[in-house]
Length: 597
Image (cartoon, rainbow, N blue to C red; front, side, top):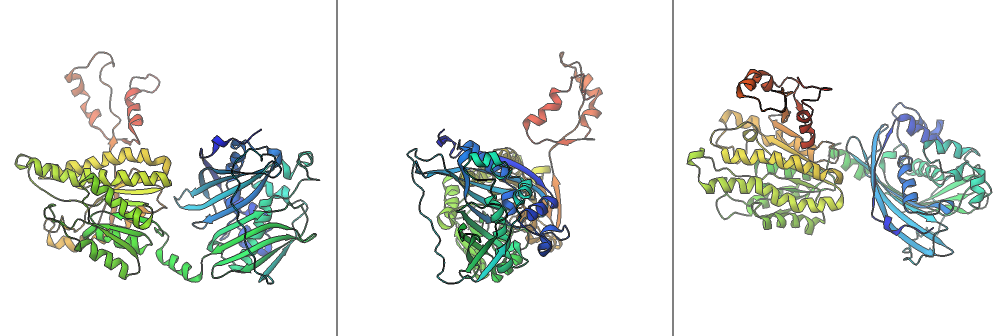
C-alpha cells in the first residue's frame, strides 16, 4: 500500500471535542502527575498541562494516519511541535482544523514522513494552540519522493542545568490511553508483536507529557501558562515501567533545550527538545494588554485620521496590533485634494507610545485605492488580520434637492468603499484562514433620518453586505460584524447639541470595536449599537405572520385586511441566519403538521 499523495492539502475537520476539568486531570494522571502536582489534578484552581493539547486532538492525529494511507503496522509518532497562543482553560469546547502539509521519502529501508498541521480554538473564540505533527511511517518509504530537510538541535557541551528523574508505572499506557490515544500498539500484545515489539510500548506522547511536566517544574515552576512552544523528536521506543530522566539546558532568556534518556541503557528516547516560554518582561507586557487583545495582529483602519477611526487605531496599537492608518485627509463632504497630515499625526502618536503603525492616504472610493490600502499592510507587515471599515463622508440634502453627484459620492465612500477595501483584504484572510472585519452602519440606516437618503441607503446596504459576507467567511474563521456608533466625530461635530458632545466621546465606542476585532470574539453577523457607554444589539426580525386563504387561490385585499393585526404582530418574532432559514416559515405555512396559524 502506497501513501496517498493526493491527501496533501485536503482539509481535515473541523473536529469538535468537549472537555471538562476531569479530562484535564485524567490526562495529568496519565503523564505521572500526583500529589506533588496538585494544581494539575485538583479542580480547585486547576491548571492544564500544556501538552494536554495533544490529548485534545487524538482524533485529528488518527485521521492524518488513515487519510495518508500509511501502513498502520509500521507507524510511529516521529516529531511534535506545539505553539501555544493562550493558556488552556480548564473546560470548554475545542474546534480543530488543519491538513496534511508534506510527505517525505527517506528511502525503501528507512520509511517515510507524513507532516500535518492543525489549529485549535476554544469556544470563547481564543486560538489556543497549533500542533505540527510528524508521523514516521516505517513501511512506506521508497516511493521516489523528496527527502526531508535536515534539522538537528546541537546541545551544549556541558552538564545539564537541571535533571528530572521519573519512573512511569508498568501499567502507565493503560491509564494514559483513557485520554484518547487508544492505538492497539500500546495495549494489545499480539498487535505489538506483529509490529516488531516484545510487548506493548509506552506512548511516545505519554513520555512527552512527563518531559513537559519536568521542564515546567524547573524553568517556570507553577506557571504552565507561560509556555509558548514545546518541540520534540521521538527517537527510541520505551517499555512501560522503565525509569527516565529529563536533561535540561538553558539556552538564553525564555528558551531551553532538553532530551529524555532511558535510565536502563542511556538511549535517548526524546531528542531535539526545544521549550520556549514568556520572560518576565513579556508576561508583564501581555498582562498589560488585558484578556481581550490583538497582540501581533495587523489591522487596517480606514478614515483613521480623526474621531472614531483615530480612537480605533490608537487602541488597536495599544493592545498590540500593527496598524495601517488610512485617511485621505479630505473635508467632511469628501471635497478637496486631501492631506497626509491627519494620518501622519495618528501614526506619530502611536509610535510615540511604543506601537507600530504606517500611514496610507489612498481613497476607499476606488478599487485601486482599496487595493493600495491593503497592499500597504501586506508590504509593510506581511499580512492583514483585522479590517475596520470606518471611512465616511456626508452630503445631506432632502431627496428632491439632492443631486446625482451627492447621491453617488456618499455611496462611493460608504458602500463602494467597504467593497473596495474588503475584497482584497478577504483574499488574504481566506489564504491565512483567519480574519476579523468590522463594518460601520448607522441609526440613520437602521431607522431613517430626514435629509439623509443617500447616507441611510448606504448604511443599511452595509448590513446586507455583512449578512452574506459572514456566510462566505465562516469556514475560514473570518468573523464579520457591524457597529452603529453614535459619537462626536468630524461628521457629527456641528449636528449634535453642544451639551451632548462630551457625553459622546469616540472612546466610549472603542470597547465594542476591540471585542469584535479580537481573536476571542466568537460572534459573526451581528449589528450593534454603541454610544455613551451603552451597547445593544439590533436585528432584522420576522414576525410569526398569518396565512391568508388556502395557498392556492390568490386571496383578496379584504381577506388580508381582516388578518392585518396578526400580520403586523412581532410577538414571538425571530432572527434568521440566512435566506434559506427565513424561507422555511413560508414554505411550512400550509403544512397541516405544523401550521403557523
